[in-house]
Image 1 (tube, rainbow, N blue to C red):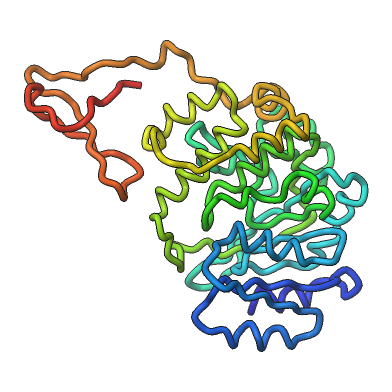
Image 2 (image 1 turned 135 degrees about the vertical axis):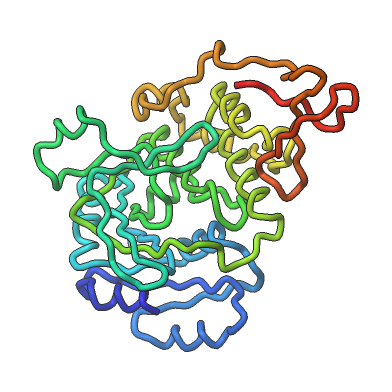
Length: 333
């Protein structure tokens, strides 16, 4: 409710066409019915658990406004947050824009302002991280209110032209629950003719939870691997080898059929991932072959092995006698 009322109280009325809430098959259907009685509010209840990704698609499909604003349920918008975002979309509908994401303390709800010199980044395992602008990038920013080009968005909060969202293929609806969808849509926006920006004049507070308040039917780690593997297979071309090297648990894991997303990429005539690395994220270092070695790691009669159960994302390393090996040989990197 805090998210909902912050939007109503801190957004000019004429800028809000409607507020769409998606109830992802929660325990109490009355919440959706009651909220739907409020002005400008439309509440959609899923008939089964769909997760964030497919719920967002459903909400976007019924939206009537020309611009979509996606917000997590656990956030609180700040004053004058929306107009700077809409202005960038008005100037260029192929832009996808995000506010600076401030921190709301989970325990005290204290509001902590985030740095305005951050952008989204990631490593080869497709793990999102915030990174400081380089000294060179800071030097070029003569105006602190200038938009910041970002290789990737966090995914929870952004604004996009609805026609552009539909043209680009919305979200990958075969991804499950949550996790990895921000990589897929970020690569797609950049590689298919758009751009991503963080707008310093817009701020939204976000509660970063210690754990997910919902269940992943296939497990958190397995779901994230499936979603990021779909991203790697469709968008990363020959560079997907570095994803698998950094996330060996993804090897051999099922990820569904991606043919429709591959065809979408061809239809949109998107750039290669090499183009993305050269023009959008040259700071992401490509691993050198010399950094990788394969073979058994030995200490006298003991060999280093990796053991992993189904619910583990990362394996456990242990030393065992080489002639009684039960695990997989660990690789040096």
